[in-house]
Amino acid sequence: MLIQNPKRPLWSVNHVDLARVHIQVGREGSGNITEGQSLPDGYLLFMPLTHAEAHSANGVALDDVSMAILGPRCDFCLASRIEHDWCSIFIPTLELDRRRDPEEASSDSEEMTCRVTRLDRQLANQYRASVVELMAIAAKYPRFESSLASTVAAAELRELSTEILGQPQAGDVHLVGRRKVPRREIIRRSHELLEAQSGGHVGIADLAAATGVSERTLRTAFKEHYGVGPVRYLQLRILHRVRRALREADPEEANVTGVLFQHGEWQIGRFAARYRRLFGELPSETLRARRPIVQVPAA
Image 1: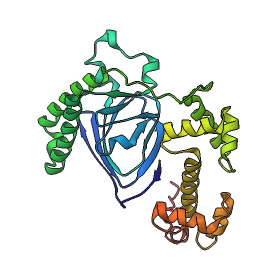
Image 2: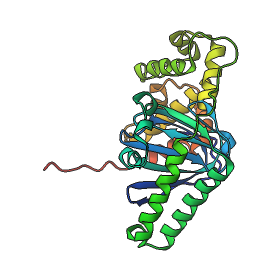
Image 3: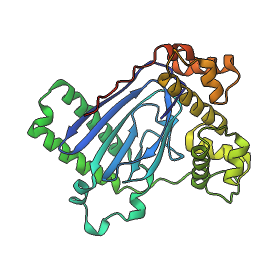
Image 4: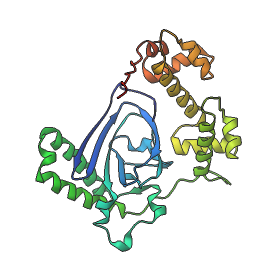
């Protein structure tokens, strides 16, 4: 996850488990770009609770009645430009299969996708209200998760989720103008280059050459997929890599300048300003406040 545009020093995730249904509600004081692969044994239903219009899922813009549905083992990118709250429900595939018509069983290709569906407003409001109310009840009553009431609530959520999974997919976003390389392929080739050159410098021209598109098309693809252009995306990657390196370094042996040079950064003052805007502290402060590494004794 790459954070961007931080507004508040607040990031939290609360969760509750109800009879194999896992609910999360998050509050993030910044925008972010979260990439990964979903779990292999279930579906994740993700919905913004605030600032939905600033979100996208695999390049598809969301709104206040949109939901991103992550099938098993699918590659996903959830992006938001500003601070926001969100909620999600994870339901094991086996739990859903018990309630679905066998003729409606998902194909392998469907399960590998992250798709966006737009619900009717009543269904969207019902989903949000159910999640928020359940989280509030679980926080107020510690015994709720082990009660019969939680089993009933989980069954209702599974029924609601099954209805949502049956909703049609929203129209996909397409790049402006003609293109020979699909956006998904542009992003995939970009990732391959970034991973292959993880210890070196990668510029916009390198990405355009690796993906086989013009820099203009590259910028459009990144804006649609991540919500930011490739220049900003590369800056965020380097900022997070440097922060990780500073947190792992020994302040008695390492210095900020050396770490920056190792990551291809030579404009120390400008980088420090960008770093402070993003993380709320200078690189030198991160180095001095590094977390101690706990040595686990051999058995």
